[in-house]
Amino acid sequence: MFKFIMDPISDMIIRISNAQAVRKHSVVVPYSAIKDEIVRVLKEAGFVDDVIKRGRRNRRVLDIIIAYDKDGNARMHGFRRISKQSQRAYARSRDLRDSRKGVGGMFIVSTSRGVMSSPAARMAHVGGEVLCEVW
Image 1 (cartoon, rainbow, N blue to C red):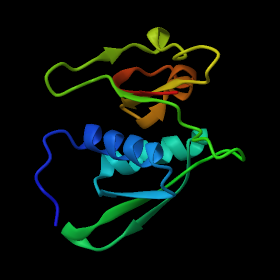
Image 2 (image 1 turned 135 degrees about the vertical axis):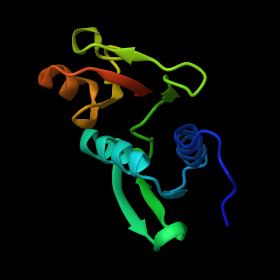
Image 3 (image 1 turned 180 degrees about the vertical axis):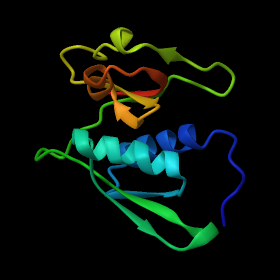
């Protein structure tokens, strides 16, 4: 059913971006714990309406319901992978700033306390690997 994917987080980002481009209501991505945590952060920030886990064992998937405003525009305007397999990117808590000021962007950071948004990581005084940027 699914092919081997070299970078599953980038694959999820591309699937969400492509679904938004054609105004799909939802998108299905293969399940992994890190993707589930990233989507949870996106849901807390209001970029995603809901996420549903379906299936069992190796056939498990995440059904991501994309958030749109009342005019039909996606709430998520852009999504970019920062830390890649070829070059990891780390930041201290004081170096985590808001992304794209005025647009309401944020970074998603994998910390020792779990995956969280950059404002939450700054408040908790923890740094970590900067996974991606959302605006």
